[in-house]
Length: 266
Image (cartoon, rainbow, N blue to C red):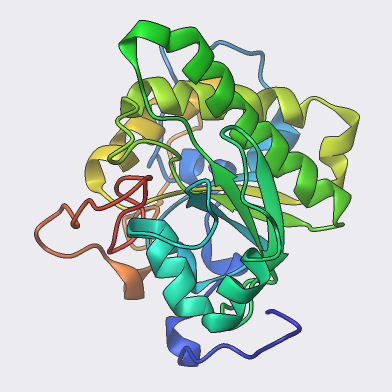
């Protein structure tokens, strides 16, 4: 929780780290399954440090959440707007002192009324087929600079929305490949030992399915888990029971990161 304010959320709405399943748990419950062809060699330790969660990023009680911000850092629609609304006016006041942020870069603030400790604001690229390589590098930088800030500020957890996949138009599969590759490479670095958990947060079932399909390519299990008696009641899904997406399946898309909170970000 922020040092500056206390969360207004009821206790039963807060999602704590213990509520968020690791890849090891998801493999064991067969929520995710081995990929036909892995892109990296297995590393058992990574399975306890990477998670997939379906739900609202603004109710997560972790050290840091990532905001898919615009260059002004002063709020907008979607995830950006939802985070600013939940954090309160003091977040805007702090962001006004930061002088904005360039595409592909990240800046950090307090989280104020959110249950998380800090917010890392990253500015994703607007997708363009005429300049795919530049946009890909900018998106990679969003994830890399966010991870670096978390380490620099001695934070133990970081939760990422799917940056740039809303009205900024980045195809979800392409964006997910980039996100997973950056995080996998980070996990292999010496700095990664300073982070206990990296969480990918999705809102829609469509995005969840993309992550469930691609995660095993970047974070393969050492072997296919043996058949167990695990049932849907053990690990029913990647979402918290109290935070299921609306029955429509698709929340309104008004800004940067699609499908991550009831209101979408760029």
